[in-house]
Length: 315
Image (cartoon, rainbow, N blue to C red; front, side, top):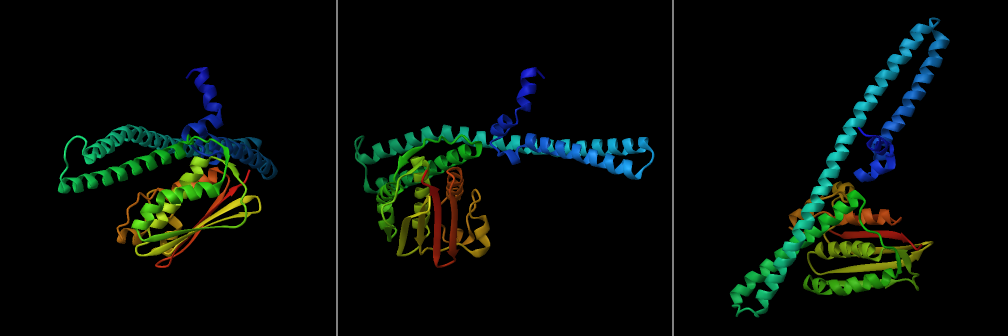
């Protein structure tokens, strides 16, 4: 091992960033902590041994044996953690590369389908048009899944770009509601926005916070199975902006609620209703809000609907 590689191994923060882990989850940092524990345990054992055992050689042997034993355990545990961290990093990189490679052909596929549907190349019969519509719809779903996988891989690797700027969460929300309006009308869903007073602008990444609102709004519409209403509330609470979205959809079973923010998790009643989705939306929501310095939460009752909320610091 060269000196450069040796010193790079000693750079704990760089190693943690490499694996996309927080400090307390990083194998190198855990090894350092365990090393300090070993030193403390060794000194404590020696102090106690000299107090109760007259023979200093026996004390030294006991202390040495304990130090070696703890070091072996520490090294073994850290190595296992490092293998897991490396496997997780490789998985995230693989998902990222595959997602990047899939985006272009999917975009081209959607573009070709739209060209064919337009009739500019040749006349399209009504029956053929229906098949093209099915192709376009399924291509859109695949593109959405690929985009979500790419976002998740960037979150896991800590490479999701952050561009802070001053913006209005109310304006972002209204813009997204207008985008989702056709989908909501087709699903027989009414969307209401309620704001309390003049809300100050927040200083954060508008595209990432917009992605949070988009995922929550998309979920709320999808999980209303009949005629329903979605109520979005915006308010200032101390030094934060509070966002809440309430629906009267299928709700989340109590036993499933503790898993709701895990990747790819979808509750049993959602699967029963055959609602589309990847199970990544709420993981993305929680990760982005946590990174932005805010908090998330929800309340839900099966058959009655759900209320999801988050807070974002104003500055």
